[in-house]
Image (cartoon, rainbow, N blue to C red):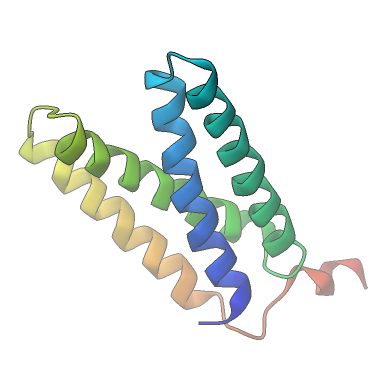
Length: 114
């Protein structure tokens, strides 16, 4: 995995943090942490999007963020377990992994500018 895809994975991790922060922030410190997580998340997505195909990068970013948020809700916030929800998240992750696999390491969005 090249460093641009690593940026997407790290950005998705911070996305989970800021989505949780939007729901649970209740004081100045947690709001500041949420805003910082938003900034880091989108900065990394934008930087990776300069090299990777924008649509694929965004789809992987959002898919991983969605899956991470649902998993966090299950384990950290005691959301009720629903087999259907977990099955759909698993299906989403398969699609995200598939998108990453069919987007070769040599592909980039720079070719569109030429």
